[in-house]
Amino acid sequence: MATGGFSSTRLARLREVLDRHVDSGFVPGVVAVLARHGQVHIEATGNLAFEGAGSTTPMGVDTICRLGSMSKPIVAACAMTLVEDGTLRLDDPVDDLLPELAEMTVLADPAGPLDETVAASRPITLRDLLTYTLGTGMVPAEPGTVPIADALNALGKPPPDRWIRRLGTLPLVHQPGERWMYDTAADVTGVLIARATGGSFGAALRERICDPLGMKDTAFSVGDASTGRFATAYERDNATTGEPVVDDAPDGWWSRPPAFESGGGGLVSTADDFLAFASALLAGGAHRGERVLSRPSVTLMTSDHLTSAQKAVSGFWPGYFDTMGWGFGLSVRTRRTHLGPSVGSYGWPGYYGTAWYNDPAEDLVAIVVMQRAHAGDQRLPMWHDVWTAVYQAIDD
View 1 (spheres, rainbow, N blue to C red):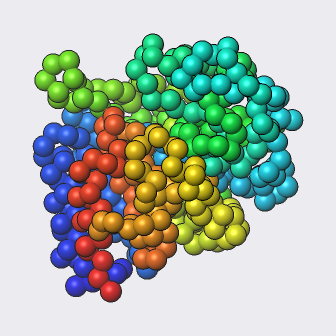
View 2 (view 1 turned 90 degrees about the vertical axis):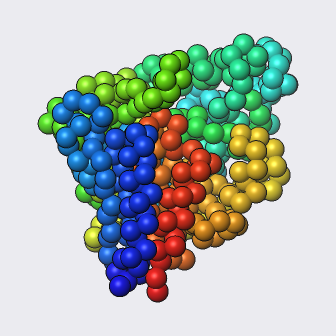
């Protein structure tokens, strides 16, 4: 029998994959949500935690989880609302709102001393921020081996104005527009949005994205009334048994408003909330009668903006851009090599094991939510199993 374009018999294979990760003790619980042809299919297994009250509370579409880097597409969408209302322009310098990033210098050698620099060839633009080509970002390196990597890691997450001042004192790693560099651009975009709207970044997200789409649980912290739905996050205990140990509990980091509202990975949300966001993008910017973006904006966000030269020198994940591109705050599939998302699919995963892709060719939204550090890495074999299970179930 087929339901919403899926074989109900073959969907059982997805449940088997999810159950396997719970039964093995990798995570206490996991939720998968598939939406296709106007119907929603939910697979939820396990509980919110291995211990305490969460060990008897089932995972569900209303379970609150740390999005990690799955925050990034929401940030980009919010920035595009400011482009649409004329507050920002994609190719204007951000200097007026972010004077800390005006007249930047650039390292003469990306791995060399911080005081050996050249002038930036041009200002940083909003387009640079959304395509992650502003010239700085994560620099994979062992501590003490690359000065700029150590300096960027030492920035911390103080209040936004202090953070952007600290960032502005450092040279860029590369010239603006030259290379794709991960993560930092999303945090800079958050500061830009706050200044452009005259309020906090979180307030702008609520007003422009979350409230219109009914994303009531998407925020930078979890209120006391909702902690009973907040899943515990785990990491691997490499020092001893390798078993999962608590990385963040419901009364931990995300239980209070942060000093820095991080666009790079600071949001919490639910599968249900994120389904509203993803469905709006798949439908061209509107969901249940509420339009947050125009269809042309969604098309722009979900198109590949990187040149072949930029992909060739990205260096962050060797080979990643052989089959992928980058839109605004999300990846875009450019070549299909496995049983998984079609060419033109877009989305992004998160550090704690959240992952989302929209596949316009299949009219499909696919969201998977768990809470285990490093589990969002799509190169892990577990994700090949998940996406294979999703796509083999398509039946129409």
